[in-house]
Length: 301
Image (cartoon, rainbow, N blue to C red; front, side, top):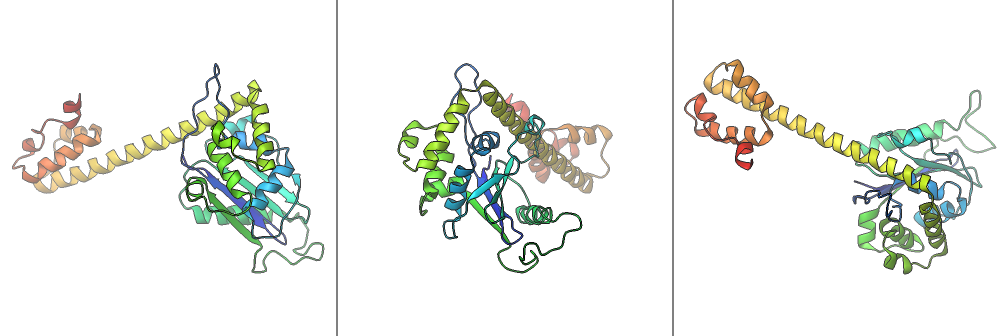
């Protein structure tokens, strides 16, 4: 599982995303002896930060350490719709506005995504365009329109496993990275002295005592695990179909049209059998020779 902290910032009409990425699996939920909830669960992340603008302010400033500091004045989407927790493609993010009117989208990305660049570009542009209401002009409050080239759209990405391993970051960022990566390790948490991170941990401990919060975190984690399993099964099915089609074509090329029974056998065979028959085909003089080799699946059984 990949955890991405994405940080979208737009200046002027303004939007900025912040994403966090991680590849470790949060531990399963146990209602009897529940562990401290994992901040890398995006539902837990949102529950901890949704009504804590001062913590989001510190987190955003830590990521944007080389930019002027900002102050979050409003969290625009603090609520979690229970229906979202089971949505395998839904991202539980936080959209916030600072004192200057700039928008920041903080997203904890817990899955690997292909086509990362076009997705982020679309997401940034869509959020920026949503700031202009029907009938409004491009220039508001004397500010320039967002189409001016510059730093109108900014994307910050913190890849948590790599950032945690390298450990070379200025200001408060190392404390936040450690918190996200090791929030369930008491010894590591005791080493953190940065006050906002300590406050986030205290909020996490309070949430831990809430049965409903733990249930929501578990529902979210279960949905993500189901998604991962479904993707794995889809990849395996695609691999089997591809290998079966390739082997069928090679057999036809070497031996001519195949009996229907052979075609059906290829289409239902596991990948390991298809691989074994593919190697057998190299030296086979007849079609029967290909299938003389005991199926690899039978050997393992």
